[in-house]
Amino acid sequence: MDELAKAVQKKYIEDITKKYPLHRFLVMFMVIISSYIYSKGDDVRVLSELQNIKLSFIFDFNKGLLASVDFEQLVIAIFVSGVIGHIYSKVSSMSFNLLTKASSFDSYISQIKEKVDSKKSQEEVLNYFLAKDVSKELEGLRVKLKSFHTRSEIFLVAALIIGWGWGSNNYFDWLLVLVLMVTIFSNIWKAFQFYISDFLPYYITEQTLLGATVDFGDK
Image (cartoon, rainbow, N blue to C red):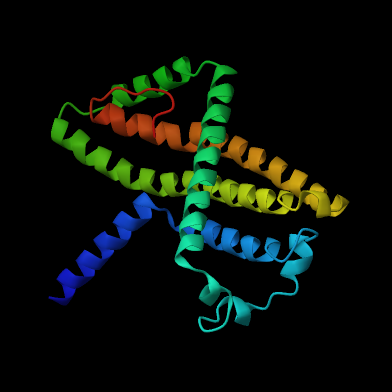
């Protein structure tokens, strides 16, 4: 019975994190904190105000920040985090498309496919189990690939939060925003390189062993 309960709990958590990834809760938390800071007035710098906020205040469920958040503010924070995630997804997708147009990867895919085909077994069952082993490796690679984009999304949120101060910001604030934006596109470039050099060969191998077709951009 305990094992069944644990299995149900695990499935429930997996379903939640698929629909609403865990890092979005951090994004939502960042939105709530920044909303609290900017609600103090017009002439507010988020970086200076963060220094005055104690962790005990943030996590005080009786009189702290989280205790002051009403249902409407929570819904807005969830909505904003979703919008930011959608914006980043669009930016990431456009960047990927631009990078793929810089060169043709058809020959690269064909070379890997031919290499795998030449070593495939005539036994479909053996190919299936080999593909399963490759799939396990792919899961770890997917996690790493996703981590690039997770960090970039969090950096985007941080940049938007600082930029929200607009007229109150000083040169350091805008320099930090610039650094964050450069880091975002650097992460997107690293994710693209990782996709080509590490992820794609395993993916092509898996799909070729299963007799499926492979298109550049598949995940």
